[in-house]
Amino acid sequence: MTSSFEFWDYFIFIAYAILILGVGLYVSRDKKGHQKNAEDYFLASKSLPWWAIGASLIAANISAEQFIGMSGSGFAVGLAIASYEWMAAITLIIVGKYFLPIFIEKGLYTIPEFVEKRYSTNLKTILAVFWIALYVFVNLASVLYLGSLALETIMGIPMIYGVIGLSLFAAAYSLYGGLSAVAWTDVIQVIFLVLGGLVTTYLALNTVSGGEGVMSGMQIVFDAVPEKFAMILDESNPEYKNLPGIGVLVGGLWVANLYYWGFNQYIIQRTLAAKSLRESQKGILMAAVLKLIIPVIVVVPGIAAYVMINDPSILGSLGEMGTNNPPSIGQADKAYPWLLQFLPTGLKGVAFAALAAAIVSSLASMLNSTSTIFTMDIYRQYINKNASDKATVNVGRLSAAVALVIAGIMAPLLGGIDQAFQFIQEYTGLVSPGILAVFMLGLFWKKTTNKAAIIGALVSIPIALYFKVAPNGWSTNAFFVDVPFLDQMGYTTLLTMGVIAIVSLSQNKGEDDPKGIPITKGLFKTSPLFNIGAFAVMIIIAMLYALFWN
Image (cartoon, rainbow, N blue to C red; front, top):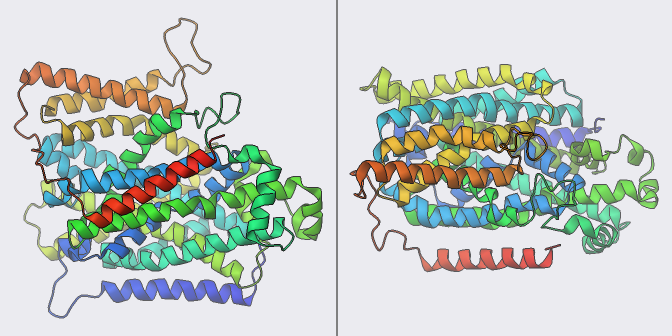
């Protein structure tokens, strides 16, 4: 199924591409008489204002898996999938208040660098190699695969050409300009992203209401499928395994969010590039506010598509296009591409530009962060400790290019994996609890030792596997247990923390570790603006959960 593009659709998309490349290359230029150094390339000269940070955080986060995957989840599951977005808003506030002051005070370039300052060079290197592998073989490859799959579904572009095109587009400005080019183009990308998403939501709800408007369409959708608006699923729901009821609010989703938003290089890097801590915290708050509206542009269209294809009168009014390969429950990820065909000429180009913006901005962010970790934590640590500014920046560009080529080769291979996105989430979920435990105790418990952190990181994987290996509850020997994926992450984190605590106490006999971080009284003090905004975000989220509890 492909959407027919006309002149104005192509014109808008090409204009968007020229604008992004033009801005990216403009901000990438070297100032007269100044050689770009590591801080310029990897941290945008520490000059980003709050609004650029907020926009860049969202642009780096939202990709094809949100537009395609979360719309598909809205189609199949309903609003419950929005917990990933709304709880991320609270997580961002926690990161801004409690993590950023420590990271910025230590002048970090990379998250592995924090590991070195808190634990040891050996642990830093282990995690740096792990993250480079994760970004190249999982994150970059999956964004290229899912993005190319979206282009193939919507436009009929063969996957190999989609992979090459997206790679070249992202590389064209991000490899040369570094984080500065990525962050400033993200400001434009997020405008397209939100505008295109809102256009699709408007179209879907207006179509459901027969042209009576968005509010009328929303009421019709809610009346038709009230069960799709339950935020907390009960055990009878077939999707309970993925979103285990109240466990979503108190369990493993916190692990996924804290790991992703707090200790993920390609997310946290733009906050480290702020003019100041206060500016960084304002950017975090802006991202939290934007997170509140993301479900409107990625989940609601999927629910509306479900109503459209299950109401013969609505489907009949759509004519031939309505019967053009409508998605079934087994093909939920086709919901968003199916909706795009109903957009009028011009707006279809805007929506497609939004999808491309989501894919390319995430690719550029991941590329920049992969090269940052390799250059700062591997190259300058082991290969050339006295590298000049020019050599450092060139290695950053070269390593990003190599990472992109490897990911481009890997991307089509993911097509052989059933539900590639779910596979990626579960793969990351095996290791993220251990890493989160190492960081949380390293940040806030001064007794944590390096040996305990290494042991904890290693044992967390067999602990996680313990909760996964039995396919149907208790196994025949009543030893292994299978629990929902998010619960598994929560249990693994708590048990790993217990292991780290026991080893630490046995080593230091209750004394503080020499590298423990002193927590001073004023370290976590935030501005009145941040406090008021954070309180407002939390009140809104509480109201949303109260309104759509079940």
